[in-house]
Length: 285
Image 1 (cartoon, rainbow, N blue to C red):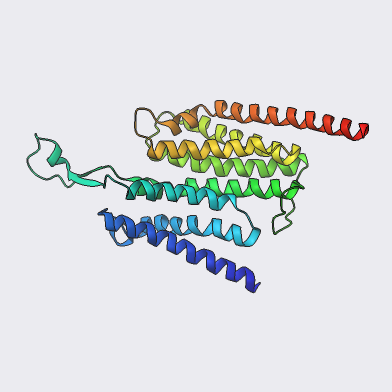
Image 2 (spheres, rainbow, N blue to C red; image 1 turned 135 degrees about the horizontal axis):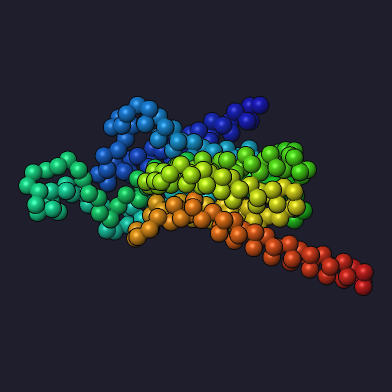
């Protein structure tokens, strides 16, 4: 119990350091940010989310010896800091400075060569969902694969239809909530049917690969689903240009599900070939 409390304390300390580093860098670069510059509830959600984003992967690493969540968050925050801190530095201009027709300052600032930290912070819940889903995948794979070290906890992992189905739907709901949150923040609009389509598709697109992992030990579909989700959010947050990559991801979820299933079919075929080859080799020997 004391060790678990120590792990939690270390994780929270790292989470606070994570949030403090990002806010400190942003303030140093000239961004109008910080807990005192936003509404109390917004500050609690935003900076509490940053603390959780830093703390959860560390807690999973200490408590269950999981590595992938740390890698996911480490790469994401590393890229955001690298892009923000390398030249050219961000510049801040009032709209009046770049619009000759406007004579007086408007109070609206245009940022050039920046906003990388802003985009990282605003999508904290999507990165956290991706890290948790990746950790779940790693735990299951390591628990069921003989040549990988076991996780620290021997948690019951269902393989029956009902148990696998329930857990798969839960994973799909986590994916959907984060996915629709990002799409909505970027202005996805339309009739309610679009949101229903995206919500149901988000559950199916992640629940099916998860079910294959739990029920049939196919590891690659869920791994591909996590990568596609995180990459879609990352593209939406950082890649400039026409179109909304994540809105496309939400609407055309069946394409991404098809990619995951195609990879799963390859994994299944290779596994069958390996089983037949190794069985034949053993019989020959």
